[in-house]
Image 1 (cartoon, rainbow, N blue to C red):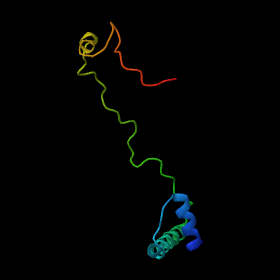
Image 2 (image 1 turned 30 degrees about the vertical axis):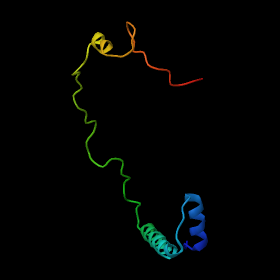
Image 3 (image 1 turned 90 degrees about the vertical axis):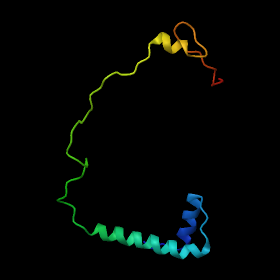
Image 4 (image 1 turned 180 degrees about the vertical axis):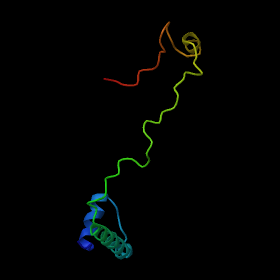
Amino acid sequence: MKIDKLLISKLEHLARLEVAPKEEARLMNDLNNILAMVEKLEELDTDAVEPLAYINEDVNVFREDFIAGQVRHEAALRNAPGHDDTHFKVPKVIDL
């Protein structure tokens, strides 16, 4: 596949971009180089290569979960600008 001016104009439209006329030649060259590199990679024999699922060998590395810095319910409500006995009161933000 070769990148030409027609394809560049289609890509401009799809990406909602404006490419300056003097940038078209550079863009075509860059895209053709990328396609050539991908075609070169397609020549590699990858039949014996196992797919990579994870970058490292670690399995289920979790940290210790602990509770810290809690505020009592009553203390949190006491500092709220609007509340009833159990809930915060906030302005309505969605009109249905």
